[in-house]
Image (cartoon, rainbow, N blue to C red):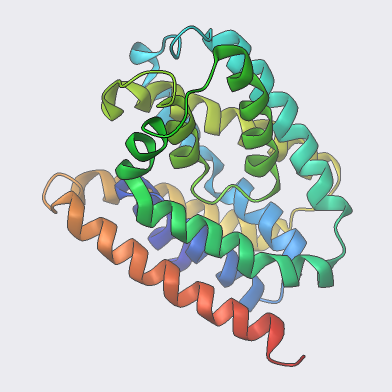
Length: 244
């Protein structure tokens, strides 16, 4: 429950809650594949609540309609969830540190990633749908920092302020998680006792994070999240490869 509280608070402040929830479930004895599925379920209500909060700001992303992006994300999320459940636990244990590293690098790049990419390449709206499918796959499979990746890809279309992308980003991240949660539940991949305890903590953490976020400067929460993400990534590299 404490891990859920911290993870929910982190998601409300700067994202990266899965850096806490996933290791906690693994430490509690849940196999890594099922731990990833259970973590997604535990953190889902907070994300869905955020999507509802942002509903008034929904709109197209450049020339790409929100409906088309939603369909692409749902398709990708379903594929990613099925791929996760098809991955042997040992193989996922070896891949997990690299997924955490990718998420950590994306968190570190942050708002600079989109402008940096836009100076070097341009993305057509039709191509964006293909990219969105891949992002949905990543979201359904693991999902760490997928919201930041979406904003970075969208910024190749136009130079909108990041705040204006919060609504579609939150909705589409929730969409990938929604289809993944349904598949995980149907496949009976969720460890419900641990998940429900963490879910209660995550909901409380989301409320707490919303209050803390009004008082703490964003750069401090970002730095704290990065330090935690890097530390956990190093630990998982040691866990996966030390015995080899």
